[in-house]
Length: 295
Image (cartoon, rainbow, N blue to C red; front, side, top):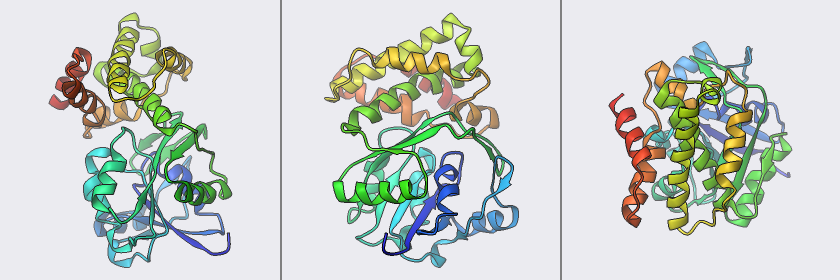
């Protein structure tokens, strides 16, 4: 690359810090971690740690941000709209956004706020990170998948790959995104619903049945939306569930146990909304939505 690109991370949580940790030590970019002034002050005082090591991040409030070339959005869906304001002063028509959030609606939300920008699709697939306060633990198993307009995709994926981030650009990104969504709808929500980690789910026929049923409803909705989801999608997702390390907890279970707002609206909420649009019945996702919204 011929110039130093300014990459802004929006959302320094369990997923966002993974690529940012590599970008922070790569000479080809200037990395800034954007947040509101109160959070920036706390980050500067306390720092953020990955696997016990303090990360060399530069924390920047909105009024301090330079123009952004690439914005990696890694917030949670419930806070996305508000968080986008923390990067707004740095956005121009040349800024590229790469969301790596759970769910399937981040691109739409970002595009509504910044219609002048190119917004890619993206997600992280791998082992879950564990976040306790400002300390994050991750075993390094994970890949960022992205897709979208060719020039923007080449630009964003090129930066990440140059920094050593594992990146894939599947030929049919919509199918790949829905496959991840189906997996999340099944395992994330089942863990949160039963307050159970992977090992407990793997040993419980009732919980495994719940995973399957939730995913089956999501697949039906995806197909109604025109997404070409094959018959193997659920079987492949169940293999992932059954092979995960037993002690791993999804981000949704971690949110429940920490008393944080969950992403149930991004999962069951989306499934239920689309099911209503297409006249489908999704009783398992409705049950999960009611219970977790109640929490």
